[in-house]
Each structure stands twice: as C-alpha cells, then as structure tokens.
Length: 324
Image (cartoon, rainbow, N blue to C red; front, side, top):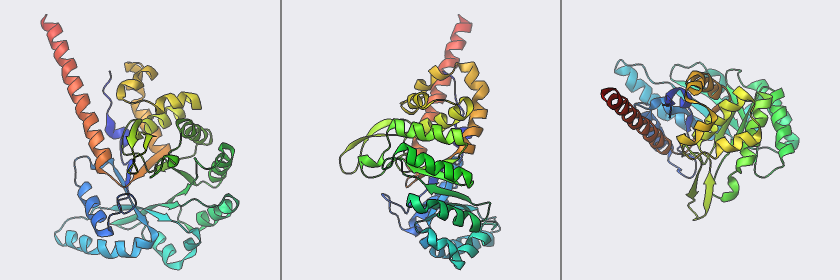
C-alpha cells in the first residue's frame, strides 16, 4: 500500500466549534483550547474558530488581553481566523456587524474569514443571499446551510444552483443528536456530485469526528452510520478530478480504512496525482465544523503512526530480501 502524506490533504480542515453542542464549552474555555491547539505539532489540521455572531463582542474583549500580553513579551500574536455563525440574516444590516466585518478582515490578530448562515426558508433564500453578498466584503467566504435530509433532491439542487449564481458557498449538516440528522450515503454522494457539476465549494458540520465511515452510538443510545472526513476529502477531490457519478462516490464514502481506497488507484498513479487531489480538496471541500478537535486529531495521529509502522515493515522486508 502506498504511504499518503496526510498534511497536504487535511490542512486546516477542522473548524473548531467548542462553544456549540454537544460540547457547549464556555467562550473562555473554548478560546483557551483553541490557543493550545495552535501550538501543537499537528496545528496544521486546525482551521477557523467558529463563533456565534452574538458572542463576537465578548470574544474580542477576551482576546485583546491575550494579544497585548504576547506583544508585551516581544512576540507576534497568532492570527485567529474566525467563521461567524449568523442565525438571523436580517442582522447582517446591523451597522456594528458590518463595521466588524470590514475592520476585522485585514486585522493583524483577528481575521473574520467566513460567514455561515443558518437554514432559511426556500422562498426567501435568494433575496437573503443577494442581500448578504452585497454587504459582506468579498474576501469573506459566505456559506449558506442547505438541508439534505428534510427536503427533496430537486429542492436542494435548486438552492445549490442559486448559490452558485450568486458566487456563494454551500454548507450541509452531516450529523447531530438524532439519527435523522445524518444524511444517507446516497444523499451525501448526490450532494457532492451536484457541487462538482456546479463547481460549488462547500463545508460540512457535525458528525465528522472520525476519518472513515463507521457505526457509532449517539448519546441517546441510538446507533447510526457516521460519515468520515477522510472519505469526504477523497470523494470530493476525485469527483472534481474525474467527474465521478453519485454511485461511484457512494463506494468511496463507505470506505472504512485506508486499504479500501486502493482499488481506485494503483500505487504509482496515486503518488503522481496526490498533490493535485489535495489542491482540489482545499478548493472545493473547505472544511468541517466540529465541537471537538481532539477526536479528529487523535485519529489523524493514529493514521500517521500506522503508515510509519507499515513503511518500517516494508523497508525491513526489502533489506531482508537484499541480504538474502
């Protein structure tokens, strides 16, 4: 099996949402956790800090003393890339929010890089998208959440086409606290295929703490098939590279280990394509929101260790063959 460099594929893929359910941390605790993650060796996995718009003033108040302390020690403060979650899009016209959006897009320590809009009624969605896009700085990525599990395929595809026409981005929920919150493999595959046809970037949220497709137990005791962030990263990249069908994508989404991906490539071809695929992932699968960073981090570390062990075993075999 070929050894896959994980860093270029998964760079900045986890948007940390520690204050959101089910973690539900306090703002101060979640900020302390994010600051710790920024200093870890695997900080490259960490993406934006996900923040409710309502918490923005308290966030800035909490962050400023950290920045002053760092600068007082003669160090350059780490930049905090922020993804703001906005439940009521009417608030986008608030003068204070607009000032923040424009001021903090080019700040040295705080960068509002994205805006995430909660699901809106289909009949008003286009007007909302148009209003938001007209007022938000172009450098801020705007994601609009589109339901997958509660609407027809044609309905959400119409929404995706509209988002593409307005140069917005899509967001979908891949989990939650109930089995009904988890899209089926086919629903997710059709979504990825539609986004590829439209060349529409997207992000995902919830339920992606594990790298591969697996069955897990929810807090309420129910068992559910959970999607994997590695599956989605590979599926997105391959679909944009080779225009895979939804059926093809379902096979990738159901892979339960690295070995399951081998039928899609021989080792030489995969090695040659790997960095092209990584760029496609970054361009179109922008990342996923997670209330835990530790769980995705632990799984990536385990993947890296398993590949290191496998490489060592392979080199030992080669050495033994040469000696023989």
